[in-house]
Image (cartoon, rainbow, N blue to C red):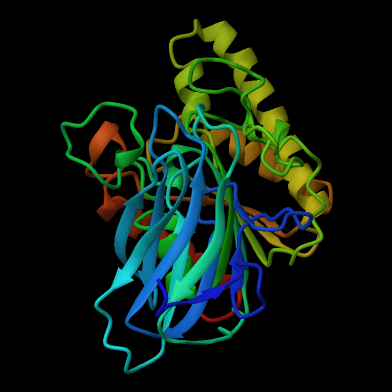
Length: 344
């Protein structure tokens, strides 16, 4: 590696993505889409990464000028990985290295980037003018966007954040994004009916589902301009087989927790416009979401709205929405945000 120059991932030459713990001496990647952006003219880039996952291989993703180019599975321990090879070293490109898969239940900490190596030149990338925070579940992290339609195993090779609607929306709007999302979780209950598995219970933590991340998140980083919530799919699964009278009671509790989540997000993102975007996998919980939004509006918060998403017409692996469905959702969200900005 003598021909490659080493860079500290915390250097200001990079733009960092995602929730960060400022007390660390390396770049900790807790959530999907977290990572770093560089502007590079080079032939090759390597990264030194550390993973503690045991039963699942976490993945890094690499994008050039907003386009996905590769995914790299990580093995346990600290290793150097080539993430780009064979570039022409003739022009600068914006290169993003990100955590492409969600936190898994068998890891002892976040994915850590210790170093970046390149044979080329780096410039500081420009800041994006807009930041969107995405809050959600398996749809937000991109489950089903890769892998065969026949693939029904819950494995990280079938989860990729790069083709998912948060990445696509951000690319359409030339925006930066921050993600808090976990497959199976809900606004009220997880797919299997656990009330403790709701995103509102961990939103104020750095990454409450991963060892080392159960600490208060400071919210000192750049505030969001827009927040897009995509929750309700797993809540609907948890409630779908209940008797009618019990389901009605549960739907009322869902609406209460949905409103609490909106209030919690507003407390930490005071200037953001909040969109609850829902419908990719049906609209069973739409009534409760609309009720929560209306209550926030009635309480004086006019910068909260419900955004229906087109239902997926095709599925990928794990019976989750296909890439085409994510593209349609991204177009819908981007169009809505442009409208709020007066650009429609």
